[in-house]
Structure formats: structure tokens, C-alpha cells
Length: 413
Length: 128
View 1 (cartoon, each protein chain N blue to C red):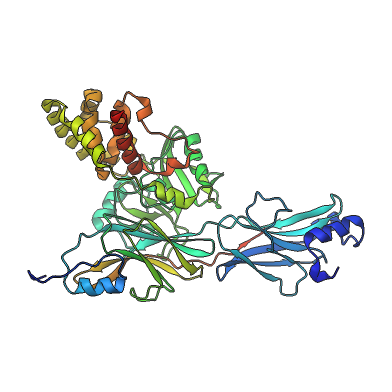
View 2: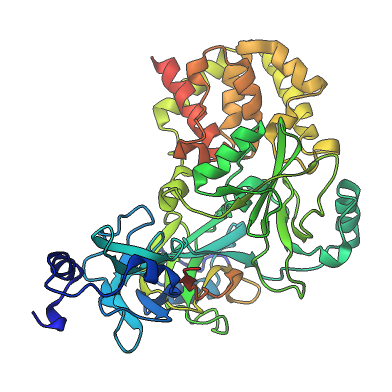
């Protein structure tokens, strides 16, 4: 067999049977430094490697993920390490989770074994910045920010995106800017929330972390921040936070220490376990059909007029308190379940459900889902997902939409 | 737009260039979207554009550009923003490419980008 015809499998067989001399011992091999890299080249993966000593039958290979066994390299995506260029262009299109390995023959175990592995190739996503951003905060914005976050340094604080009720900190820390994701509590659930996305928990404030989780205690988690990767503002090492409905800003890592957000209680190294395109699609809730709308309208119509008027008035009062005062920077709609108007609505009980469901049809009213969750007596009609369920990332707006659909379906029997 | 002049709004089977011609001719005022964003990612070796906005405008689109220095009308490929929330292009992943969310600005009489990604990075991953 010529060298050109050799494969890792045929070579392994010849080494095992003694048709080829064993190139080196595992002990010798351990002392040799080897490095392998993977990178894109015209949309396909390129492997590049180096080693202080390259064995005649060493090879490099590309694997679908870190979970693949050493035998399970991608067909055709391998090369002998002794190749002069030390570069090999595979035909594998660039995508997430792939891993490159450098393998040597291990005579002790009688098979090829990887001695160098890259981390999994990341799911590269580049978010946009609105034109005109980042910018320095206005005087009014700065005053509002520093009143909530007294440790904020003005020189580190840039506005990277405008205020919007659409997304909050947890969503942004995961790279989403089209939905609101409440932080789970306590800390173990909060960690599960990030880990379900694929992030790995690392030591709190670790320099390898790119996401920090915040809380006022281990039982109350409040906020998520991420390392800033946007357009340069002239200062390295900044972090970025979407502050509830308010602005998205840069800050020093612990610059948001405050009574509202507490302090950093967890840190995460990035990773991706979710099917991102599927998660994006979860945000889209089908519009109500004509017969569904008619059903809802009929139920709204039979609510007594005085209750309906009282609901309308009190709902507006409650809505006026959302994200004001001490909830101005809140990232959690559960924080809105308080105050006189809220308690009055809650005391009205299940009789207002048709009116409330009607409100939830309007996307901007999604924070009212917390009232629905608390007064709906039928637990099957309250949508909730385990942290490990990808649907947990659909966002509160989509959950509100699905709640409406599910409630109407229940009325239709 | 003066009364009685039959300006037909473009449908989104038209290209952005064709839409621009019709819109520039004086189409009725359009509802403006806000909080627009675009994201550039890749899978299977090609670029994926994804986007979001509050109240997506009927003639908003998302474009892929070879460079951050390209003009807003120099998109390599595009998708109307009303058509879903992501678009898998046939453009092979290349460093430096950029995604933009583009809206019609009646005052300027042209399409302008309102959100731009950073250039797509070159990411090399190595063993320790």
C-alpha cells in the first residue's frame, strides 16, 4: 500500500498487526507539544497544525462535535500531519460545534488517540448597533442611570441602543433582541436558564466568562450582563447591559452594583446547545382566526358592565405604574405584581379573565401575563416550561400570545 | 402625493431598487418601524440574516454587504423584512461582511440603513 492510499483505519490495522513499525511510545508522545487550529476559509473549514516532532503516522481530523469519539472523524476531513504545508482545507461548510483534533498512535491501547483538541467552533452571531450608536448618554439619561446605579463610571458608560420594552437584559445577554425573558430564581434555576442555552457555569467573576448573572441574594436573581463586543468606544474590557425597558449601556464589570440589581452572583462561559433558528421561530405566534376572535369577543361581552368599567380603569392605573419608581430598571415582570391597582385587579378574580385575555392580545400588554398567571384557577391554562425546554426561550410576548390562544381554545371546548 | 395621481405601492416581489423608484415617485406615507435590528450568523458555510423591529415597515428590508464601507444600495443580497424573521442566503461565509436593516426615508428620497452589524469576524479556534 502506498502512502497516498493510506487512511487512519488502514494504518491503524497495519500498526496493530506489526506490518508497520510502531512510531513512538505514548510516553514519548506525551512530552511533545502539539497544536491544532480550525478556521474558516471561503465558507469551509481549514485545519492548521504544528508540533515539535511530527510522527510519520500522526494525523489531524475534523469532528462534528466534542462528543464525537476519536474514530468518528468526518469522512474525508483529515490529513496526515507530516504534510509539508501543515494546512488542510476540508470540504466541510463552516458551522457551529465542530472540533479539530491532532491524533497519534498509542501503542499501549492499540489505537489512535487525540492529544490536542480545539474547543468547539462557536456559533458566531454578530448583532447590530443602531446607526448613531454607541453615543454618550444625555445629561438626563446619565442622571437617571446614576441614580439607579451609583457605582457607574461616566467614562465607561456609552448608550449602545435606545430604550425599548421589547427586550431585556436576559435576552440580550443571550444575543436576542426581539423578546423579553424574565430571570429565573433562585440561583440554581438562574444557572439552569443559562446552561440550557449551552453556557457553562464558571467561577464567579472568572476572566474567561462572557456573561455575568446578578442578584440581590441567591434567592432573587435580577439581571444578566455580557462582555461588550460592539463598535469600539475607546475603552477595552467593558460589559454591556440592557436595563429593563430602559437603555442598553456599557459599564465596568461590576459597575451596576446597586440595591436594585444587587451584585454579580454567577458567571458563564459561552456555549450553544439550542437550535438557534428554531428559538427565533418560537417568537412568532399565529394570529387569531376569525372564529377565535369571535369567541373572545362573546366572552368579553357577557362580563357585567360595572366590572368591565372597573377593570378598564384599574388596569390602566396598574399599567401606568409599570417600570416606574423602583421598577424603572427592572428586568422581571414579576416585579410589577404589586401595588394597590394590581391587588384590586387580583381581587376581581377569574371573572375578569376574558377582559384580561383581550388585553393580552395587544403585544405591549405582555407584562400583564403575571396577573393572568396569578388569577387563572386552571393550572393547565397557565403556560410554563422547564428550563431545559427550548420553548422557555420563546419570550414573554410569545407566551402571552399562546396564552390567549390556549384560553380561547378552552372556551371552545 | 397629489390627489388623483395613481401611484401604486410596490409589492414585495419587487427588488429594493424597483421599490425605491416607486416610493420616490411619491407613494403615500408609510408606517415607520422602530427598534430595528439585524443579526449576521452562519450555518452550513453560508450567511444567515435575521432581524427584528417593532411594527416592521412594509418596505423595510435587510441586506448583506461585502464591506462596512459599501453604500446602502450596494447589497449583495436582501430579504424583505416582512417575510419572516430570518433568511438563509447563498453567500459563502467571508470575513468582513455586514448585515444592515434598511428603511425608506421619504425626506431623503432613498433607502438608508438604520442598524448595522459589526463586520463578520475571522474566528480561529486552537487547542491549548
